[in-house]
Amino acid sequence: MKSFLYVSLVALLAASLGGCIVNGQIILTESFGGGVTTDDILNKEVVDLNSNSDYAEHKDDIKSVDAISVVASIKNNLPTDAKAHVYISDDPSFTTVEEVKAGAELVFVSPTIPGDGSLLVDWADGFMYMVDEKPVIDQVLGDGIFTVYVIGNVADFDLDYKAEVTITLTVGK
Image (cartoon, rainbow, N blue to C red; front, side):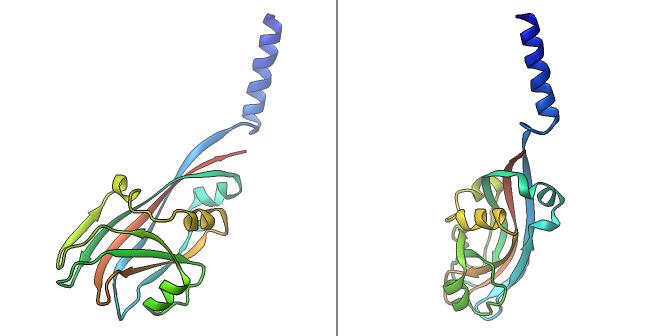
């Protein structure tokens, strides 16, 4: 019995060291924004997760996307209340709000930003405002390259924002 236990322990240790059953979590944080988006000036940013060394190293070993949160600081430069809508797409060529709404996927809607006011969405609250995680998950599991578009929910909007997305992944062999 003692030798069986010893052999089992050695086999388990060898399998773990050989990468057969090693799992872990990594957290990716990618910034986007740092600009102004208005109904006349559409701000967009191409995000390439491959530039993150953890993602590049473990891309083929992703077992699951466990959590997605957006952290943002948003200033509403107009007197009308507004919400920030974050869309993502493979297509970086959209130049109008109408094109974004028709061709990109809505993934995040902020709480109301008071007219001429500011809003901070922290990490813990950012989960609540994700309206559709699937497009983000598809991008993470795909090539990891997508375009982020931030627009307002009202016809006339002027938002100054800085944001980042935090993605928690389980990886393993």
